[in-house]
Length: 357
Image (cartoon, rainbow, N blue to C red; front, side, top):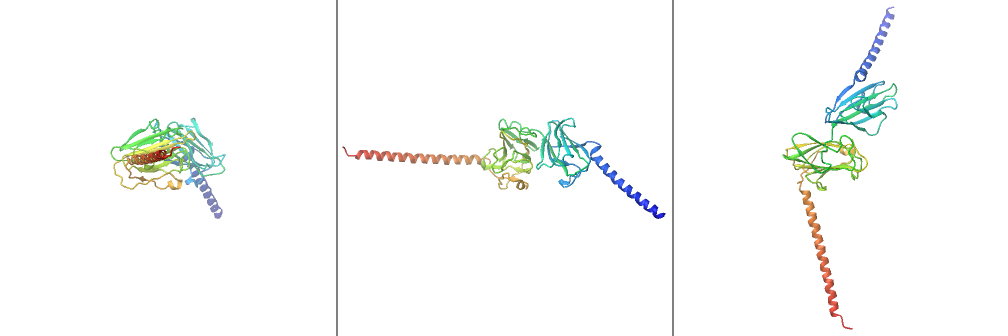
């Protein structure tokens, strides 16, 4: 009899343990998804969040979830730029993204599932984005990661004519036109950033340009040049690849100015670029390092470029080329004139000695 009661107690303990685990799982899922929408704050720095169990893309989510997130840019004049890395099982596990603070807003992504090769990009038209993940009772995959930033169009008047910007002690922003939405086709933009107290610090936070061979950049692109003019001699970087192939990078000018130029053709548009800039009173003494955007592996390394070129050298080179070219033209013209004079003199001499008939 005692042995019977002992086995019964052990059985009850196991049942209680299993029930406890089930309740823990249910409570965990409920606390993450089913009770309330999770509120997430965005700002001007890149942030991210993931679905339950994502674990860098190697984990798995839980079955039968219905999860909600609301992302707030923090201000009515700031919009959201979103990049979704997705790995869900079709057709039962789906992601929805809405352009607003609830599911009643316009859908940016509807019933999205699968494992796209590259992150999918979206931008809102106002301060909120609303995200939902639904999973069924069968296959489990990794889930999703959402990268996001709050921003607006900081392009100013640089796409109408060259815009002069003053770098100060506080961080300011510059972006491609219509950021964080897709930039416009057929644009030619130029900005000159100048510091009255020292050098200019640039922090290139984001780059997403129509993809092209980095050695050619025949489509859309933006340039960074050291100095107040743009030519090959003071080129720092040319970017023509989409997110996330171009890693964020920093740059400090050698003098007091930096030129940023942006060009788009008449076809594909992407999100462009977002740059922070401020004044740096510390003098730069390192040697010049010219960089051009290459592969994702090469750009993943630190790209802090400092150069020591006089901003007027670009004009000096052009002046020298002009002088040399002009001198060559003058020499060629003089030689041609001498030859013509010699030929004419020779012909006159022949006529003078020609015997009469």
